[in-house]
Length: 239
Image 1 (cartoon, one colour):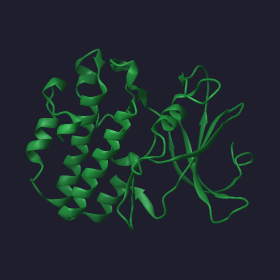
Image 2 (spheres, rainbow, N blue to C red):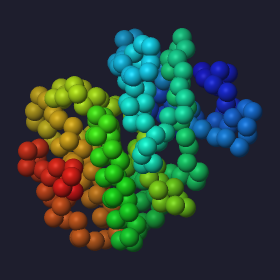
Image 3 (cartoon, rainbow, N blue to C red):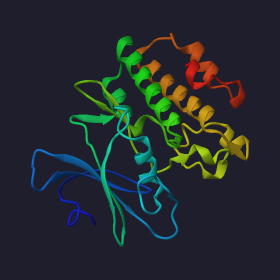
């Protein structure tokens, strides 16, 4: 639905989800340039937000990526976007030789402590950046993080479930993220807040990474971050 107008030729399908499909594309005029092309069909009223510099409200996913900016290398960059009669087209950077963090851990079986620590710090940096920008990612888990096989750099992807933090407390019914990494307050309470939810999701990922490197080094911190009561968890700056 998009390659005829976005300036890229189809190369392969990268993934499909509830909110759209993502393809890898190669630029028609500069064949050295590649990008991830996300096509989002809209079927009715969608969530739109105002963004500085835009003449009218834009799709929330686009708004959240624009709000994140380009200063944090741990967040996938939005290169361009457009709207047509069918929906939205997002053109994003595509890291070379990358895979999801989930797939990387599955393929490796085990990783060393240095790699695990590097992953932890990068994930924490990403969450802190998004929080400081007023963004709750809403679906932070291992399959929404890309890892470069050569550099081991991480990038958080997929802002389809993101929420603007100025709207908190959020209705628990507005959480549409991965159920496995879902903070317990989503089921326990009618509303929830971004920071303790971030802390829970990060700790759940840290737990998976810790198992891959067979260490108990982070057990105490993880336990404090996975407290069922959000008020009992560490804050982001304490992690």
